Structures are given as C-alpha cells and as structure tokens.
Length: 392
Image (tube, rainbow, N blue to C red; front, side, top):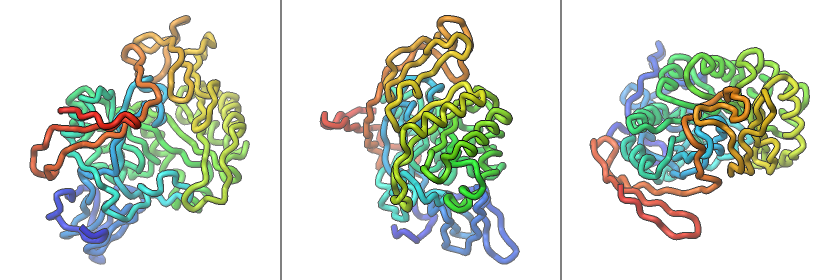
C-alpha cells in the first residue's frame, strides 16, 4: 500500500465514529482539537486517520511499529503495580508536531513500512498473558490517534485480567476522551510545559486542552501520573516550574505523582543541549516545596529522585536504581509497612521482579485483522541470548 492511498479494502483500515460532515462538503475529524477538515482521500495531520468513502477511517488498526516488554516504571508509572512488566507498543503518526520529539522516527513517520508488525487485539492480549505481563501500554506515539485499536486491545486484555495503560499528551476532545478512558486503567500524561507560548510555538497545540484532560482524569477511576520533559532555555525556569506545581496542587491535589525527565537533542532541536541533572533536582525541590508528595526525576541516574518516601514517617518505601527496585516496604494493599499510611496508586500484592530488562517481542499473527481468528503463536528475542519461541 502506498503512503497516501486509503481504502476500505485494506484489512487494517476501519471506520470510525468521531467525525461530522461540514456544509462545504468536507468532513471534520472530531477526535482531537486539531479538527482536520478533509476532502475525499485526504489524511489528517496525524497521518493514520483520513477520509475515504465519505467517512473518517483509521488506517492502522492492528498494525504496529513494534512490541517490547518493559518495566512499568519506564512509562513512567511509579505507583502502578511496581516492579511488574508491561507489553508496550505503538503505531505511527501523532496529532501534535513537537519540535523536540524523542520518538520522531515513529511519531513523525509517513511511511506505512514503519508499521511492520501486526496483531489482532485478541492475539496481543494472549501474548501479554503468556509473557506474564500485568499490563499493556499504548506508547511510543500517542494512542489518541489509534483509539479504536487501543480500546479493543484494552477490552481483550481486561478479559484476561490484564490492565491497559495510555501514554498520552492528553490532546483530545471531550466526547472522544470520555469514550477512550472508559477502557483504560492507567495513564501517564505528558505535560510538555506550562505556558501557552511553548505549546503553540513548539508543539503546535494548546495547553488548556491538556489541563482539561487531567482534570477529567482526576474524577475517574483511571490512575494517572504526569511527566514534564525539561528542555534547557525553553520550559526549565523556576517561575514556570513553580506555576505548574501550584496548579497541580490546586486542581489535582498533592498526591498526583510528577516526573521531571531529561531532554536529549533530537529531531528539530538538535542545537539545544541535554538537560543537566541539577536542573531536574532543582525542579524536584520546587515541586516538593509546593506540597507535591511524590516527585521523581527520570532519564538520569538519581536514586534519591527515584525513591518513593512515606509522607508521614519519611521512611523510604520504594528505593529504585533506574528501573531496578532495591528495597520495597509497601504492604500488599498499598500501605507504608511502618506507619500504615496509604500510598496512592494501584497496589494489589507483592512487588514484581521484572527489573530493568527490555525484551523485544515479535508476534506471529499473519491473519488479517478482520478475519476473526489468528495464529496463536509469538516469538520473543532477548538481547544477546538469541530467539526464544513462545507457543501461545
């Protein structure tokens, strides 16, 4: 298939629901505030949604840029089934246009060949189950743009007792957002900065929409954490960090975990230097001073900034070294083992022991997604150890 052709004959292309016809003959996609207005055959900015047969379709249902088993802390989620493994995957395209994108080869791809892997929702859920994953994560690019596939995968996983995680920038219209998060168990929202100027000039989107998404999640059962990538000279000033933290405390409370992570030069911001570790530590101090109880640093080696501490008795509850848990003092029902203070999050038993391993996975599911059945096999390759075949 070419990068431009759209056809309902393609087994990976499915109709969608969030769109409406305009008086001038165009059709508007209503998934996100981008509101792409499409003529027949046109794709939206995200690349994977477009107009064909007078409707908006998703052209990447069941297709992926690859699968990998990761530690859940890498999403990052520090208060959601700690130490467990998660089957991660993404597709191609994105509904934002961040100049600093760290996954630009996937999110900015306009090549169908990027989507070299495939799996029906049932095959993917079965693979996650056989691999011992507690959850699946829609990541690498934003699941907002492939929401139909993500929701079906989440439902197939839920039937097997497996959780679903959305790693998203939160740029989504309210009706689609409500439907999407009804299927999710956890999320990490990428709060890219705290100025409208940054959002409009660097990401080509709008900050208020993201804030609305976080306020929406606050009132649901979806566990969510927040990540801000600090970019030197762009969103790392003390005043902006303080304003962000004050808003989070006022609107979301003191228990929402916040992750400050380090930028590395990439995509269209290669002239910007990497984030100094001290910048992350300074941001963490500001956040703690504003009353946030669970503040973490990422993409750097900083054991203090990656440790979960009890806000009541100050005991280190979860001591991490990168993605390895060195010490764990949380009860099976999520309380401080010393004083009994409840730790916000999702804890349902002993800590997992996946560690820092990264396990690429290749799913053998050659049957077209719409055919209603699949080849129940998966193969997984562990780096340096050769392929391991898993019969599913």
